[in-house]
Image (cartoon, rainbow, N blue to C red; front, top):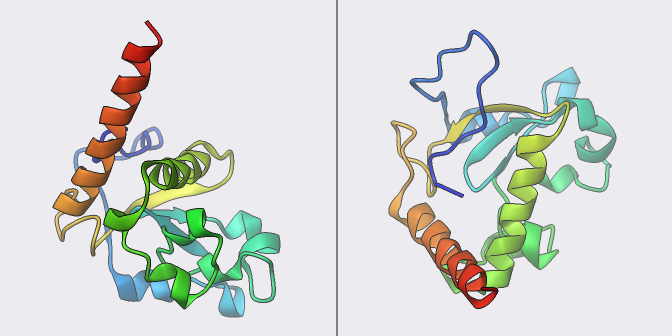
Length: 151
């Protein structure tokens, strides 16, 4: 679970530089007027337009469209209050749950990786921020602990 280990680009794409998505661009991708639907988890932006039955206006997960609502993936609060949860305050199991959802989007057959969201998880160059690095570092220690306790 390395911070900068993005999904493998499609054949022929330049993988040396990840696309950086602005908050404004993400917010415009909510499926309104036939527009694409994007969401972000831990700063990784995915095009989930093929899942409009889930993410479009009036659908059960419409809250996620056009934003990074990472804390909501673990709290179950699909609202602005749920987004206020600080990642540093989450328990290890909760961060693990968010990573589970990131893996779901990374491995989904039809949802496509778009780029890194400039903000709290990635900087303007698409590099992981200290917050993301710390969260993922915590999980790596937990995983290492599990492996050694199983020996």
